[in-house]
Length: 65
Image (cartoon, rainbow, N blue to C red; front, side, top):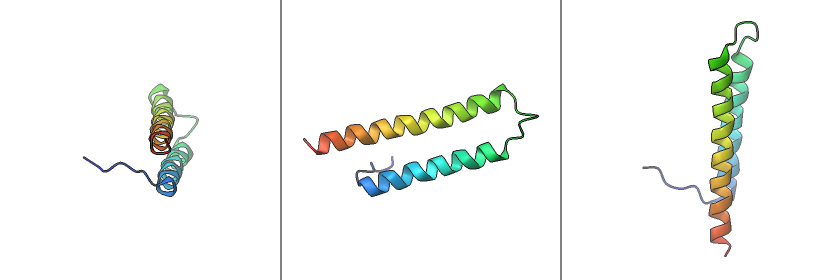
């Protein structure tokens, strides 16, 4: 199991990397041939980033109490 990222700078860098991957995947998709599965995959990637951001926010709130 991986270690939790608790450092705010590392959290931001992680999210930036995930968003960069999303942009690269988005750029690679041909709008003329994209299908529902491609769009679903993009939506899932954004949902994963959002979930991770929520986890980081909750973690930071717990450490600030």
